[in-house]
Image (cartoon, rainbow, N blue to C red; front, side, top):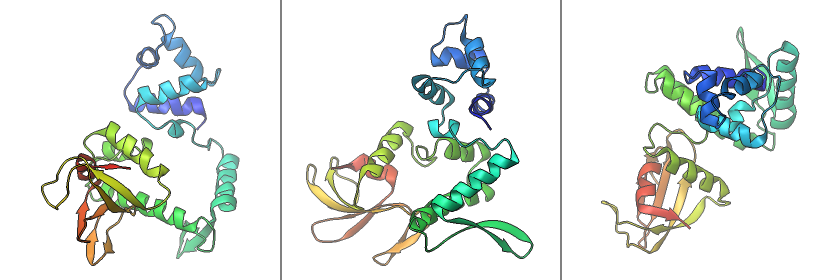
Length: 236
């Protein structure tokens, strides 16, 4: 879909009229529906600040609005070819089904494998009714700033942005509130190991989901979910 089609799609997804969306963005009542109509018909392209306001009003990541236009088969193929060139995707076939596979020798294979694992985990949660369709859509369209398990969405957004800025998976965290379990002193720094995989994995003999292991002064290992971690610790 072109940008205007994406705006229309997400507006209807949110159950908003053009007038309501236009006013939420900040347009006057007299011009709100006209301005949104111009964007949705691709007669006009929103400026960067307007695009950000649209994404905020629609409750989606701005990148969801800027997704590649795949309205024609030519554009679909060129998008697939770009993924092949830049990320190592390649066409494959298992029995009678075609599929997309990852080239394990590609420099970005590890990155793509982690993203695929995260998507697969969310999709299987949806298939097994652990995500309802609305939550799954929120996860997709607000990615990576939304998790149904994280109570404070804004805090989760800030946390994920901060996580992306961290160069090493080993980081120092300040204890801001003593948790119920674990001997941690407030205002003291502790070394943490961030687990980023979205599927359970073993770490120091324990099987855990995505979250943190916080190492105390005696090198004992404690695991906290992202939600619990933010209650007791602050990165940096």
